[in-house]
Image 1 (cartoon, rainbow, N blue to C red):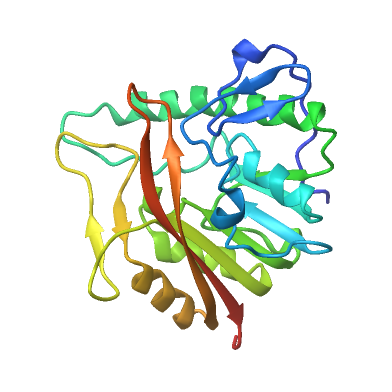
Image 2 (cartoon, one colour):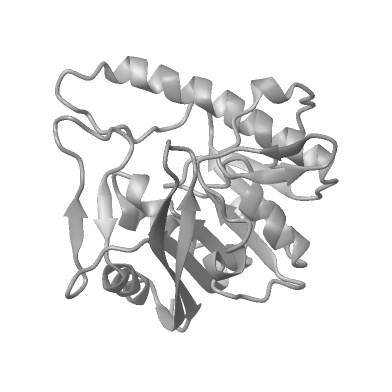
Length: 249
């Protein structure tokens, strides 16, 4: 059974939400919450993707998937299914069902953006929509599994990492927002006021320890800084990208 989504024809850019700023042929520059165009190599830890099969976990509107493909990768883009499990922080007083409904509406505009860009860039990337906590064996294994700024948004980041690691034949690359800590620490981020979509700050050492438990040795770590231009005053944020190789199962 073919697990991949059928391409969706999208022509109306107004129906799209581009999470990352990107340039689309025939449209121009669009988006977004993050502008990684000048810093994408650092975000990807300088990894060489030529000839490798790659799973991009949390592909959003596709910028990172398309950049890995441009570097020679055979890419499968993964994102949550519209009827899947949305990890919304259950803030006191929050209408969680309304928050789920909002997530589903956002999913439509986000995936519209992906498919519009996919067609304009003549991408051959395939797409799988499912559950991050249960990535199926039918996807096969990948030379590289990449998680870009995903774990902080998940209720159970270790379970998600474990699920992704099952699909990694060789390499995991995990990029997340830097959190200064003295060891393998995690901070619970929300307060009663929010945010409702971010659960954790994870230290670099914490992610490295998780990968170690799952049988991966850290090869190297890349530190980088990226721009979030969507607020009135653009801000820069520090990130780490961990490259780890499988050494045990």
